[in-house]
Image (spheres, rainbow, N blue to C red):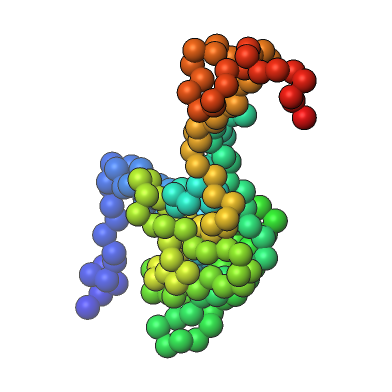
Length: 205
């Protein structure tokens, strides 16, 4: 075999010109793909919160709804947050995963560090004997019982307490006694033996 048979055939200039743009496009695609991959890797996905949030409040009318924003002449009380109430979350094995107390406005947040959606048992405790839990069947009630079963990440896990002796009825009726001076009409008096105009002032003692 001579050297002539081993010679690599040369491509024509037209073939080289057609393949040059293709090579350039491939290089650009690789560069852009790497940039997109880098951006995706540098931006971590935001994890869903596993905290449990809610409010402990004093329920003046006992309806299980946290009433707020009522004006001074509406006859409706505004409920207020209750601080210092203990809130504890345990998992399905009875292990305490978070514990806190309600803040000055009654709000609380349990940082459970559990996976979102994990079943949890939330228990409220620590109120004085003057309070008792409000009802849960009122229209629009958000209140739950002192033990509630929720999942990690739940919000609106509320607890309402009221003092029965200080119950505030919505739009309570008011009675006003009206008195006036003077002697009543003698013809309307039937419970005395003497009419006022015939009583001798000398016999009054």
